[in-house]
Length: 252
Image (cartoon, rainbow, N blue to C red; front, side, top):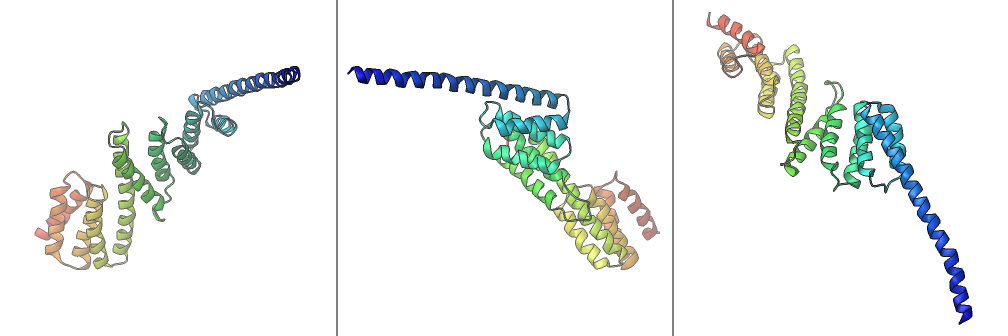
């Protein structure tokens, strides 16, 4: 019995200091994590994006289970975005959404992921795959978060995406007009007007249709109807002013 008690005392003597040491290490790690997080947040609030990125990146890698890890991850993504490193921002927003889907930062991260894709859009002459991806994300946001406080920004994002995609189509129509291909102009203008109704490119596209009918196909009646439609539906636009001049020529 005495031997058993002696053994237990020895074991306790080993375990208790070890536990105390581990607790101290945990407290020390937590303190270091707090310090790193606070420093990164200070850099973020001071808009020192490069320093914020370096510090917050170290924080998220070193303390993945810290109580402020979700906020730190969000601030890291925001720092990349504000520094216009949109692809890296998208990666961080996506990672946050995946790891911390229930956090208070996930909702804004979903919106900013869409903004990141839109911001990476290449020159209008190139393929607009990132814009189409952003459009899908904005629409998903509205579908799944209809009561979000960011809903107006998501709607605005949809409109910005549609404007850019409409411009892409308009530039193609413009090329067809310059190449003297009026049938293609008419076809694609009608498609643009249907697909991107409500964008600023519709009246400009309709004007090209009217000009193709008037100059290239010499169909004055159809051209006149097109010009009248521009004047009636888009009276305050520059294409409406030009359409008015064409209509005067046709009507004599």
